[in-house]
Structures are given as structure tokens and as C-alpha cells.
Length: 369
Image 1 (cartoon, rainbow, N blue to C red):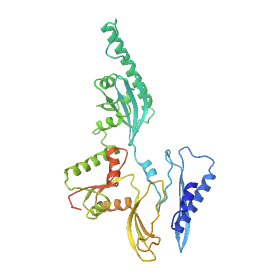
Image 2 (cartoon, rainbow, N blue to C red):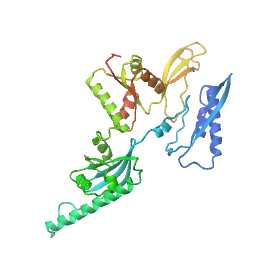
Image 3 (cartoon, rainbow, N blue to C red):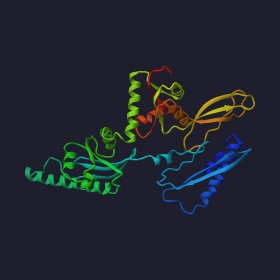
Image 4 (cartoon, rainbow, N blue to C red):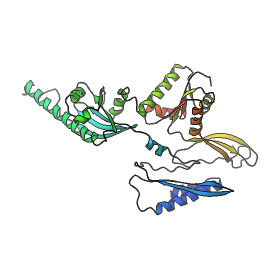
């Protein structure tokens, strides 16, 4: 916070700089008076707002989060940054994940869009090649005992992990791996009977370590129709399909998508959750130059300065500011389009931000815009 205070002195608008530094002084005083950080962290909102008649006032709100706040975020903007808190309000479905073959097993959870490894197990099951002097029957018997013991260890680890979750929150269990291993495990009753009823299906995967979780979720796509991640992947799959066929029913980039929204031609508006930009009107008070510009910044950085006038070199002033996400969402509502926010947690979603600037659309018909 002290570093941000020092950097605020570089803001070209003296008024804005003073307001930012004043707010940071207020926050530093609040933090110094804090004896103990709450278990889930703390969220401060503070800023200077107009109180009318050329007067300003300080707004400050303190929130004690119901869920752990896992990131430090400093965000300076004309509006409060609420996305991380709004994410907590979304309903997150929880699924148990089990990957196994005769060498290893991985137990994990899918919560919302995030996967988490809970336990990784290694087996002591011998290979199919028996040692010299052992009869085939004796070797096979010992091997089956080792397999049974390994299945039992997997079942105990999974039961221990999944029974900790409230029954109403655990929507189901997905089992992935090689055949016939996963079928033997599922049919052998190694899971707790309450969990066995929640098994949604068995799915073939090539990997049984942590990297197999994505493969398992993709294989279970039809089963997981309702969760947010699958919806996002379907939206991006349709976008790339229309893009590849050159049907003209896609649009990307800020200007093109805005034009299609104004034509009410957009069926699905795709916005990256990492999109941080605003549309500003810049004006020079010396020569009267005026222009509109979209500017972007990272969520943990201050809003960049307006810059200098290209005509006379004087400092430009921001006379109007519009958040891009808010503007596009409003245009989407007016045109009866569906707005889909896309995470960068998967490849196609990451490409939306990197290759298309975080803004794209699937159109009802080709407009040529």
C-alpha cells in the first residue's frame, strides 16, 4: 500500500492524485488499527466522491467475506471492483473425481471451475510377469489380492474425502481410467454406500495423475451439462466452429462487436472474465481537441493517465468514462442477446483474451460488419 501511495504521486491530474493518496492514507490508518486479520480475510472499499456544490466526501465500506479471500488485489478505478465477491455468490457445484489404473490413483474435487488434488496413491500390484519358480496360479492369486487391497485403499481415501462434503453439495462422482480397472473398482463396492449412489458414470482417460482431470471432465461433458465450465466450453466451441466455416456469423474485436450489438444482430456475447478496460472521452482544455479511446489495465494496477494532447501537447482530461463490460452488457440486454462470461482457466477461454482482446460474439445472421 505504501508503494501504491508513492506511485500515486506520478498521476498527472493533481486532483486525482490527491484523491488517490488521501484514500490510501485512510486505508493505511485502517490497517494499522487492525489488531487481527479475520480468518477469511478482509475487503476494504474506499474512495472520494462528489457531494455536490464543489464538495467531496469519503466513502468507505468494510466487508468480512463469508469465504476465504485468496488474492491480494489493489484496484484503482472510477467504480468499485466487485468481480471476486460476485464470484462467491455464484452457485458452485461440487463433484468428486477418481482416476485409477493398476499403477496409481488420484482423488480430487471439481468445485465450480476449479479442480483440486486431494490424494495421490501408488499401488504395489506386481506386473504380469511372474518371478521364476512361482506357479502361474499362485502368482495370479497374489496379484488379485494386491489389486483388491489397492482398490480398498482407493475407496477408503475417496470415501474419507467425499464424506466430508455436505451431501446436498456433492452433486456426483466421476470415475476415470483404463478398462477394465475402473469397472472392477466401481462394481466391487469399494466406495461407501452413500457415495456409490452418487457415481454418475465411468469414463476412459489416458492419464491417471492430476493431468487426467481435464480429460475426465471433457469425457464427462454430456453428464456435466449443468456446470458453468461446460457451458463456457460449448459457447467457445460454437464460436470457433462458425469462425472456421467462414459463415460470417461471428464477430470479434471491440469496434466490430459494438457495431453488431447496435444492429441487434448478436445472439451470444462472449466477454472474457479478465477483460479490464473502459471507454473514455478525452478533451484538451487548451485547444479544444476531443477524442474517444479505450484503455486497458491490469486489475492490480492504477488506471493509466490520460496522456497529452497530440495537437498542442497539453495534458488531456477525462470528461466521460464508460466501463466496457457494463456498456456491452447493456447493449446485449437491449438487443435480447445472451451474455456469457468466459474464464481463462481453459485453452479456448484463454485464447479469447489473448487473440481476440476478450470480446467476441456469435451472430444471428451475417452482417458484414
